[in-house]
Structure formats: C-alpha cells, structure tokens
Length: 273
Image (cartoon, rainbow, N blue to C red; front, side, top):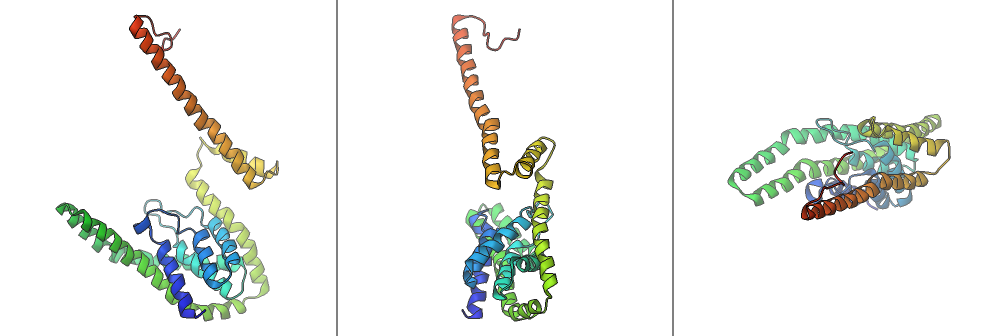
C-alpha cells in the first residue's frame, strides 16, 4: 500500500478514536481498538491485536483526573504499532515507541486546548446566553474537531510519512540485547499500569477483594477468567441478591404496616423489643 494512503488511513483512525465530542465516551480511544485497526491497515492484524492488548495493560490507568492529563495514548498506540509492524519488530518495540510518542503529542494537544478550544467555548457561552441550543451544539462539534480531531490526525499523518524510514533505520541499529531488555520492560509496564489503576480505585473498604483475587491467582493457580467469574458471582451475592431481598422485605413491612393501620393494631415489624 502506498505510504501516503497508509498515513491517511492511520490519521482517520486517530481522528475517529478522538471522537468523544461526537459519539461520547465510546472507548474507541483505547489501545486495544486503535492498535487492532492500525494492524489491519498495516496488513498484520494479529500483531496489532497483541500490541493493543499489551499497550492496553500499560495504559489501563491512564485517565484524566482533574487537571492531571495522561499521555495521548491514541497517537502513541497507532504510531507505535504502525512503526513496529512496518519495521518487522516485536511488541516490546511498539510499547517502547508508543509511550514517548504519547508524551510528546500530549504537548501538542495541550497547546490546542489552550489556544484554540477557548475560542469555541466562549462562542458557546454567547449562544447559551441567547438560548441558541443549535449554536451550542455546533460549537461543541467544531471545537472538538479543530482542537482535537484535526490536530491529532495531522500529527499522525505527518509523523508516519516523515518518521517511518527514520524509525526503520534507528530500529535496525539497535543491538539485540537492548531489544531483549525492552522485552523485560514490556512485562513490567503492565504491572505499572495496574498500579496506576489501583491507586485510583483501592481503599480500605475494597482492599480485601484485591487481596482475595491475588491469592486466587497466585497461590491457587486460578486463571484470570476464573478469577473474573468468581468476582462476578461474589459481586452478585454482595449487591444484587441482598438488594433484591432487601426490597422484598421492605415491601412486606409496608404491607404489614398498612394492615395494622387498618385494623388499628401495632406494627410489630417496626417495633424494637
């Protein structure tokens, strides 16, 4: 496939993955999706899926929290996968390329957030004062396109055209022991991604469940699928079933209370002895 057509398809993938302004939070931006599409474009969908799963683990805790913005995982995943497949390299190389690319593109994204997006936001405020809902919707779509979709797609397009030959030369010059070291880092980074996620989620109320899952996987050798099934059943027992029985008992109490009010008796269900 012509390099310009490939670059254009990768750019369109990046633009689609950044379409939260259009489709909402659809999870199209996750590496598992973008890397699979990039692998399909590069003619090796199997490697794209494998690289996507690896990058997904590394970026699993990458979410915007307040003013903390994570690396731009869309461009990093697409370009890292495309460069690695184009050069015939392993998943470790895709991960090693994806993280610095994502960090660099974040700078470009922030610049457009600072200098371009506010213009559309202020225009939307003006439409809000006028009660013009269609104008507000239009500013949301245009603001998202010109401050997110178009810049990221342009970066991916130019980077692939300019960087593909350069990346191939650089990767060809990397010694084998460095590639082996990158393979070891590939195994460590998913653990780091999970650590970022646990930092957000874990607290004294649910830490016992993480310890239980760890014990099942490490000491009882239960596969990940088995741990997930066990966790789903445990969640149903603790939340779904208890809520169901709680609502039923509440309804019985209300029925008893109604009967007691009619007969003039005492509501023994609510009395404490």
